[in-house]
Image 1 (spheres, rainbow, N blue to C red):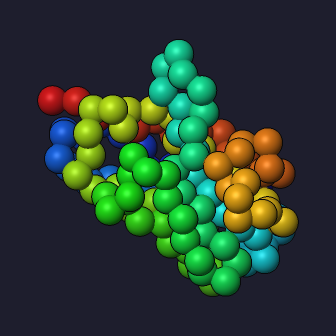
Image 2 (cartoon, rainbow, N blue to C red):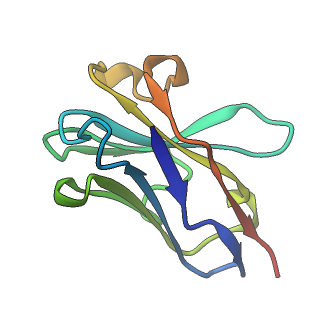
Length: 125
């Protein structure tokens, strides 16, 4: 089971770090590709970023240069460092894992096996 946390209210231009962890008794995340998606009110869930088991990273166009995904296998956790936040970044952010995924399909939610419960990020002045 994945647990996402770290959401909250932040002003435009600010920063926030999201965390996604699996419980110690749960499976290890080190062998999985881990991703973040987000879903704004009334919109579809969209791809934000992914980090593979061998630390390759890919980002959605709207967050490139502002967000950074990382992982700490020792802590069984994945992080999303968000900077220069914009009001359009407001959404519920979900972490997800995939044991096998093709690089051309990383932006497809259907490719992921497990999902966290989501954490709300609100960017507003």
